Amino acid sequence: MPRKARDERLDTRTARLRLPVRREPYFRNIQEGRAIGYRRLGSGKAGTWIARHYDPATGRRYQSLGIADDLLDADGADTLTFAQAQDRAAAWFQELAMQDGKVAARPLTVRAAVDLYLADYAARGGKALGYVTTTFNAHVLPKLGNKLVAALTPDAIRRWHHALAAAPARMRSAEGGKRNVREATSQDAQRARRATANGVLVLLKAAFNLAFREGRVASDAAWRRVRSFQKVGAARVRYLTDAESVRLVNACPSDLRALVTAALLTGCRYAELAALRPGDIDLGAGVLTVRVSKSGRPRGAILTGEAATLFRGLVAGVAADALVLTRADGSAWGKSYQHRPLREACHAAGITPAIGFHVLRHSHASRLAQRGVPMAVIAAQLGHSSVKITEQHYAHLAPGYVAETIRNAFGDLGFALPEATVVALRG
Image 1 (tube, rainbow, N blue to C red):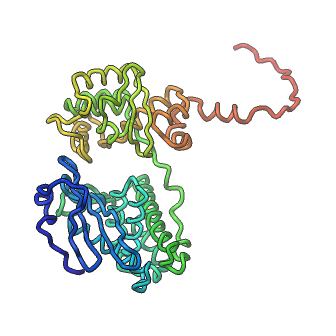
Image 2 (cartoon, rainbow, N blue to C red; image 1 turned 120 degrees about the horizontal axis):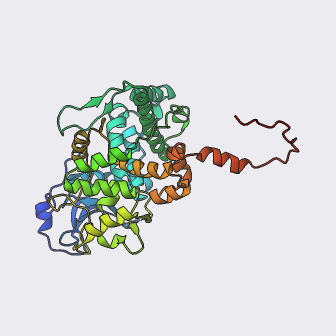
């Protein structure tokens, strides 16, 4: 690993935030024709990293690298330190050199294939870059990272896939401490481990397929022959009963109570609720607008009478650019901030095992299904891209839904059936 360049203006966030705001990046030359730039965007905004490459034959070329760790700690995916930005720039410089015929393509390792895929995923605007990066780091690179893609056999990939399914599930652990795991003791837990292994295999195949399309690997036969575990995707949807919902809300502290109640009454996701502004709530029309959803498209969630009453109180006196739902100290609900307080509330409410926040969304949809609401309406409320997703999770809860669907779809064949000649006697 080459030594990282140092620059007293760019090494630390403190030094970078002292730089005057300007559109032209602050560049640091790494090698001849290669430089790393930092663009200072303004007060309260994180700067961005950019790479610059110059060659007399091709001129100047630029590549966006990511967001600087000015406001948030670096995660190595979206938010980068100066050193991490240099690593990402080095990969881009190497790619340019191979494209220009300056260096021969080296045998591709799994780690290099993953880096290529992550860069492509980020360039395509992938919505789950952090999750995908973490998945590769946790499940792929420790076992396969240094192996050559061309040297992998179907049996080697299959053994890795099966070992991943047999390994205990990883749990949240203290940073730098012992990794906590949960053994798969029940059939449903074993099914879930196989489903997780399938998801990781899909990501690995996606990385290998990109390398194959780019001409970095001669054949895709090795991973095409490895099949996923079958019949492991039908997870049982857990939801709260009305009584459990009331107990949980009553057991929550005031800030969490508003968040949990909003989720139960709207079916919105945690991140969607945490980002709500007063302008997103139209009490006159009874609609809550989700500006940025998981699918990347905005949607509207219908507010019931209870939900309208809840939000009427929450938005009263709140500035237009402020968050509607905040923690007790006025700060935003950040990533994973809800886990511990929700677990404690479940314990106080006697809900065992404790639920995750997404179960509140399931509870909203399940209540609608049990009251005969059409699947298409529930899909619209949840923002599902297809009614099939809704039916997969909630159709079994709808009274008569399967029977009515079959009868309406099948219709009559037009047989000349004989009239009944037997009359039933009254009891």
